[in-house]
Length: 260
Image (cartoon, rainbow, N blue to C red; front, top):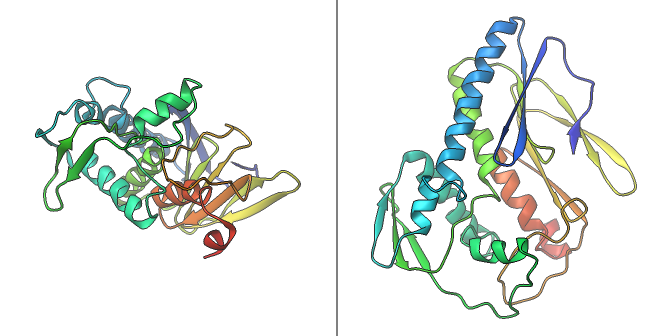
């Protein structure tokens, strides 16, 4: 999924590598210097989020969470707490289909090993509902925020851009997630197996998920086996984080559930 070249005038483009992808930042502004300042602020936020949320960085908060033993509690930054809360809320909203605690299963899949047919469910975290802390009830789970971290980063950048009076922008995390800001309409090209469709995106986010590019990469420990109904799914939502969550979840739904 990518945006085509039919863009508005006075667009200033910036890119930055983070979170194992390339972020593309496009700002509509007559002053190139101000657009560069917006990009610098945005890149700083993206890097801060990666340092906080990546489980592959030993000093990150998520790495510290994954090292907790039973009975231990960790005080979190507001940034990490809010992202984890989105993840745990998504687990409830998707009936367990979207699960941020499957780091061990993800490692097995990446190593080429098949997942156990009946995986043993060990480990439990408890996120405090009223203060930024997480408690390890039982060790064994590994938190991995790859399924929503990029969308969460785009939403955080958006929140900062509101304070900087940015009136129009298109923020992208790789080719899979786009967030359109302001009244400007951005043409987003959706590449299908048979046809391509251009979607006008305005004041919303869109995220893509599918097996065509990465193969069967979505991990689940649901007891019932699933067979993807569609090779690709695009999901439009108010926030990039929600678009990421539901485009992934839709790959684990049957046709009736997707329509609903």
